[in-house]
Length: 123
Image 1 (cartoon, one colour):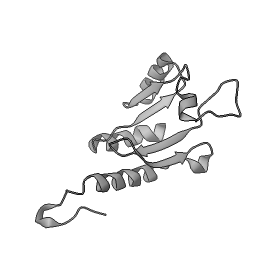
Image 2 (cartoon, one colour):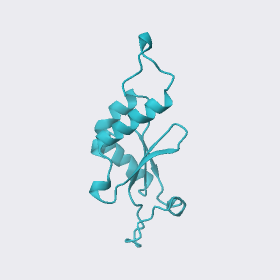
Image 3 (cartoon, rainbow, N blue to C red):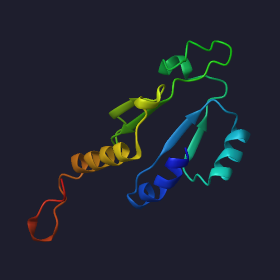
Image 4 (tube, rainbow, N blue to C red):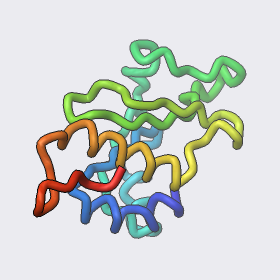
């Protein structure tokens, strides 16, 4: 999460939004956000209403029923561009991978954008 705090300035400049979902209670999330300096939305599913619907339950811990940590990058219509299974360290998205995904989404969405003189934006 600390790396996402560092990334949030870039995300905001690009008119992009980040959202996190956690099983922590809202009051815990509020304190956590304040402590980190996170400005993005963090949603609470402390009652685990979405756990089964999203099929992301970590089955190795039936007592606490945590989510398997995933990161998704989404197109504006909320279809998935990429998914990263963060259960193991090597499956987590790096900040550079998230930047790359956002650039690819931007290119796909803004096909109408050209620089002055008719040049296409950077690839």
